Image (cartoon, rainbow, N blue to C red; front, side, top):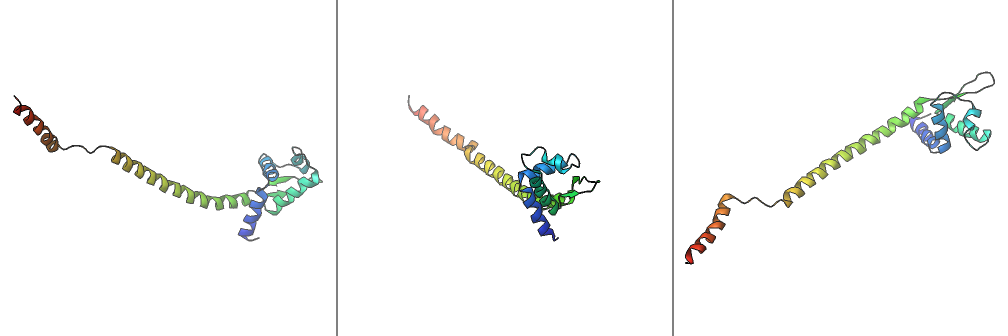
Length: 139
């Protein structure tokens, strides 16, 4: 099976909530079809169809223990899906980091624009002198 085809099968299998619940149960250890069917309001043949999809995607394997066929989680397919998703996580993390930098820069610019410009000491003296001279002229 080609990696893309296997990845497609993995995501298709994971799209169903019943199959995700089955995988979650299998993280606790192997289980029979009857044990996996227990929490669901569906027939054993319906659960078996879900198991075939999971098995076809490489997410589970079925063993043989006399007449019992226990199912167990197969981590490789989940690892492949996780690695594929990781590429996108890194992309979005980088994009959000760049956005954070831009927003901080914009905040600094906005804060700088909102502050009144400090008056220089010579400008303050120049504006104060006409007021003093006006007071001297009137007796």
